[in-house]
Length: 219
Image 1: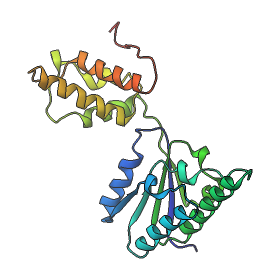
Image 2 (image 1 turned 60 degrees about the vertical axis):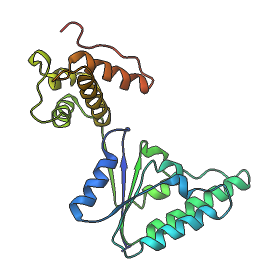
Image 3 (image 1 turned 135 degrees about the horizontal axis):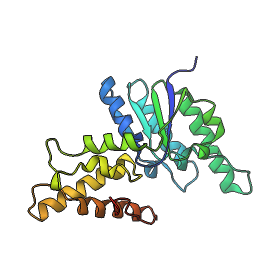
């Protein structure tokens, strides 16, 4: 059997991939290292492999969890060789494949798109775990646990139930909660308002290049 364990988390941004990696570290009592790929990849030939070698050598037998976020940039599909750049890029992917396969600890890769990962990596994962977009019931639950405890709402509205109609990820909801509560403090109010929550949702929607539509206008 190959040493270690390799896992792929894939799903839309904000669905909890990074959070899950940190919770796994807390649950197992292990240190989680989030790998900053910008410090790993170099435009100079051989430097990327050197950086990766240093990383895996240092992590060897340490019982660490290595977490590669946005892994597509380093674990992406190999291309047909058209020039020297393609050849060296493919060598980096092949070298990384070898080091991940030989690592005797837990390696977690996170990607927004499973299809972007090189098939050679996919075959070697021990587990591939999808992080789907939350449904309405799940969104309401996320709203409830994300808001401060014992909080009251404007006119005693059930904001979590109302706002669950909007298709948001957990990451979006956290941002809206922070925005609404900061606005309440700034206005000297003791509770967040529906209008501020809707403005927060509009901000999150427009950040992703989507058109905001108020689903509560007729309610």
